[in-house]
Amino acid sequence: MIRLGIRGSLLLMLVGISAYGVCQSSSATEQVEAHIREAHRLLSENRPAEAVPEFEAVVALDPANVDARGNLGVLLFFEKNYAAAIPQLREALRLKPDLWKIQALLGMAEHRSGDNAAARSDLEKSLPELQEKKIRIEAGLELVELDSASDDLEKAAAVVSTLLALDPENPQLLYTAYQIHSDLARQAILSLSLVAPKSALMYQAAAHEAARRGDTASAIVHYREALKIDPKLPGLHFELAEMLSSLPATAASSVEAKSEYEAALAQNSFDERAELRLAEIAMQANDQTKAYAFGARALQLQPDDAEANYEVAKMLLAMDQPAKAEPLLEHAVRLDPTNAVIHFRLSTVYHRLGRNVDAEREVQEYHKYKDLKEHLRVTWKELQLNPEKQGVFESKIEK
Image (cartoon, rainbow, N blue to C red; front, side):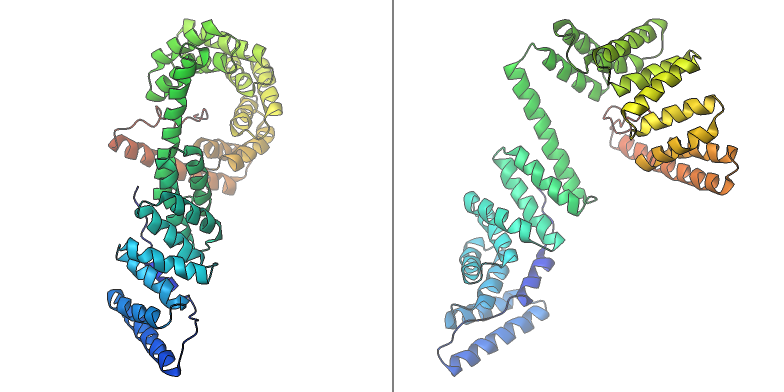
C-alpha cells in the first residue's frame, strides 16, 4: 500500500512538545537548554540528522525530558531506524500519555518492525484523537494495512469509510476503498460457492458478475437457472427483466421483459423499480393513462427517487402539463444534481413556462455535466475499461 507523505506534518511535533524533567544541577540545566536550543536551530534550518545527537545528549542528561524523547523518536523514525525510535517514543508516551501523534507514530514504527499486535493497539487508541487530517489519514492507512493483512476486511472497510468522510476526494483513499471492497466481494462469492455451490443465490451472484463484465447472454442464462431453483427469490424477476431490456429490442424479448417485470411486481407489490419499468413500457405503447398510474404509484412508494420524479415528470410533459412536471424535475435535480439529462429536461420546462433565465442556467448545467461525463468516458476508454459494463453510468435517466 502506498503511504502518504507525512514527514512535514509530523515534524510539527518537534515544536509541539513541552520539555519538562528534573535536572540535578544548574549546570546540567544549562547544558540541557543549550542542547535543546541547538537542536531546534538545526531543525529550523532543515538539518534533522544533525539534531539527533543534540536530543541524545539531552536524554543522557535528563531522561525524563519529553521534548527530547519525543523529538528524538520522530527523527529516528524518519531515518527509518525504527528499532531505535520505538523506545524513545514509548518513553515519551509513558511520561505524557496524551501525545496522540507520538502514539500514532509509535504504532507505525511497531508495524514496520513486525510487532503487529502493539502496532494495532497504538494505532486504534490514537486514531480517534488525531486532529490533523494528514496524520490521521496516514495512521488510518497503516491500520487498514494491518487489518487487510490479517484478513479482517470488515474492520479495514470501516476505517477507510471514516477516513473518506474526512477527505472524500483523496485518490489514495478512493483506491484503497476500491481494493478492500473488491477483496470483500471476492471473499463473499468464494464463501458462497463453498457453502451453497448449486443454489439459486450462487447463480444470481454469477449473473451479477457476468453482467458486470458486460456478458449479458451469460447473465440471462444464470438468472434463468436461479429462477428454476427458486422462483420466489427476491429480486430475480426484476434483474432478469433488466438484462432482457438491455438486449436489442425484439418482440420476443420485449414481451418476456414485460412479463418478468409483472412477475416482480406480483411477488412484491412495493417494488418501485418494477412499477417504473412498466410505466415506461406503457408509455412506449402510447397508453398514457396506464403509464401515469404505474409512475404515480412508484413515486408514492419512493418520493425521493430521482428516477421516479424524472419519469413521472416526463409523462406529464407528454400530457402537456409542464406546470405539474416542474416541481418533480426540481426535486429530481436536487436529488441527482450531476445528472445532465435532468438539467436539460428542466430547462425545456422553464422555457415552456417563460422562465428564460432559469432555463439558460439549466442549459449551462446540462453542458457542464454532459462534458464531464464525456471526459470520464474518454478516461475509461484510455484505461481500456468500459464504464457501462462496470455500472459507472448505470442511471436509467438517459433521455
